[in-house]
Length: 164
Image (cartoon, rainbow, N blue to C red; front, side, top):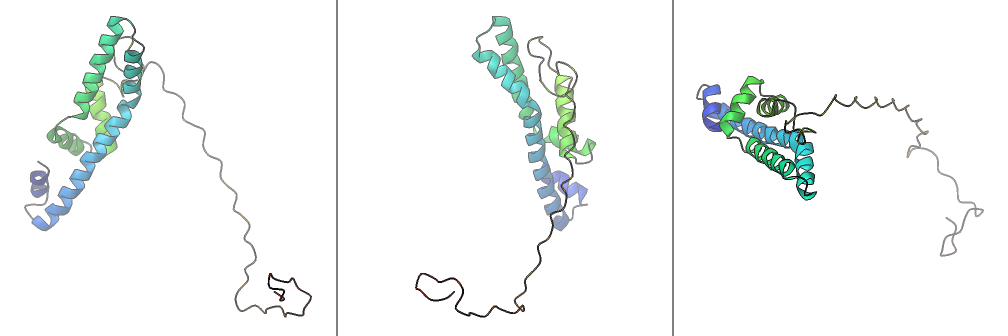
């Protein structure tokens, strides 16, 4: 599928198609990574629900959510490539749209107990900006062309007893 898309995009020029195919394959990998990152909080919550051995209804909801997450991560390349093309080959945007389409939200965070996937409230505020670091003062440079001190016998002695 990737090679066909690359050949069609490159007007059947194999030299250009090879680099396009490589780029598309890397984009697919990035989309899968982004999907995994978006689903990680929900996956952790579902696993915690299973390990806590809660009520059967909550366990069933957690298992259903895990199945949906696995299905989302195992989408065929044709679906991922189509979404990438819709998002101008932006892997992060493609992953967000796929997760939103499949879950009805930006992920499975917090919604497992209610049986509805999605965020459980307003998004947390962004972290405060990092204050700028003042520039460090530069030490004076000593070049190899600077004059060397003479050994006048008043200096420090080395292990062998000779002047340094």
